[in-house]
Image (cartoon, rainbow, N blue to C red; front, side, top):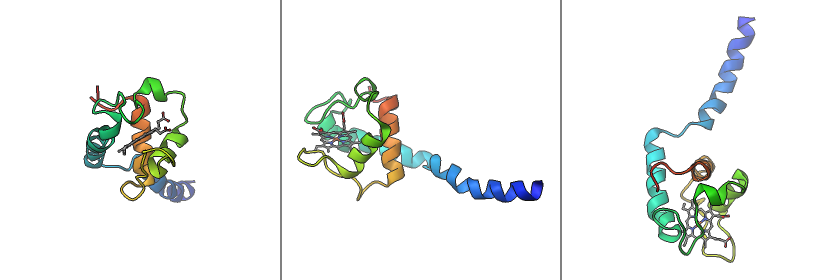
Length: 107
Ligand code: HEC
């Protein structure tokens, strides 16, 4: 039984690491980026400006995948730029997730 389970755990580990694989340092950088770069349009406190408000109450009904795609690819015909040159898919996913939950001390 053990012989079967160990390789299985090993095979699953990279997936588990990928799910929460951002270091605390990278997460802090991403929150900084959110305030500075995203904040330039969405407001420092994310209440909106040129860009829409990015507070949880505005995003709760929007699918995680849509928000992630908006961050990665931007929205054609609007000033929302694509970030895929700067952010990985995993990082965009993280940003979309914390926006839905509320960015740590963003308000
Ligand atoms: C140059 C200005 C600008 C910058 C910089 C910018 N955005 Fe946007 N963003 C917009 C605009 C404008 C919209 C609204 C697009 C529309 O009308 O659908 C938007 C829309 C969005 C949406 C969709 C909101 C919704 O309600 O559907 C998300 C999520 C988002 N931006 C996240 C980000 C993140 C994260 C960053 C930084 C990595 C960022 N934006 C940087 C202008 C900007």
